[in-house]
Image (cartoon, rainbow, N blue to C red; front, side):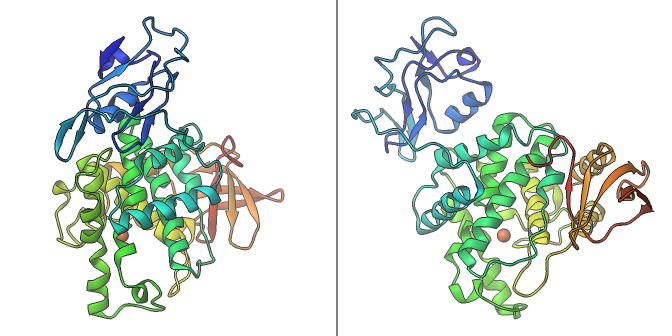
Length: 375
Ligand SMILES: [Fe+2]
């Protein structure tokens, strides 16, 4: 049966796959539809889907190969889907970071050249983070200091994009955003720096601090990225705007326009904070990585970032469970005993049976809550 895309489809099983006219498969037959799928389908302009008669009925395997006849909105307007033979199924989502990095690098490179961003592939990566990063403290574990800068700018940009996307999703979760919004924040984070791929390679290989005109050229990555993302199917207008505005700051100190905070959408504010957390944790050719403690305390104290987000970050640190592993730059680690309630970046730790007094910890490189360590 055919249902209009809305709350009625939640819990139903897709009888036929949903595909775009260009052949991209959005959802496979047999999938039980979730609330987040409604926003997803709407983002692609899909207005109706074929579902099984009974909620929860077994998928119609005979029909599974045939795409649903969903109307799809394109830049030119609404048009019916192409009548096409069954498509070869997409490969499964990459299951580890190396594969994610390769997929993201390819996606950014092609998008920078003018191809549509491969939203379905990026969504598959983001979805694999959802279960792992569901806890409010997930962002704490995702701020991971990388002391070695990758030589190759393409690799460096792809690693950064993955960190920003995943951190942005975790921060969106921390603020209580719904799945569909978390997905858009993650996509925005993954794609925010796509304009970097359009800059002259000499800028990306630059060894030191930029001269003023080089800095201006570098700052153009925001507009160059937005040009590639605006109006793309599957990406909300705010997610596309993140490319243009992720260096704007709440106190108006950012670029390219020095916009004041109230003009910056929440999604972009989240990406901006994630971008700064990820950038601080990575070494650059011209500076070493900062420590976990330095990055987090700088952002928590800075009026450049969204206040509610900073408060939520500090609150989740305040609630870090005893037993959280704190790792130091020299390879040693300690166990968290207590966070100071009034000053959540002062921690009491135990290492090798000795008590370390409540103190600031500038050489922390990673913090792993106990139920997430190794995850
Ligand atoms: Fe950027």
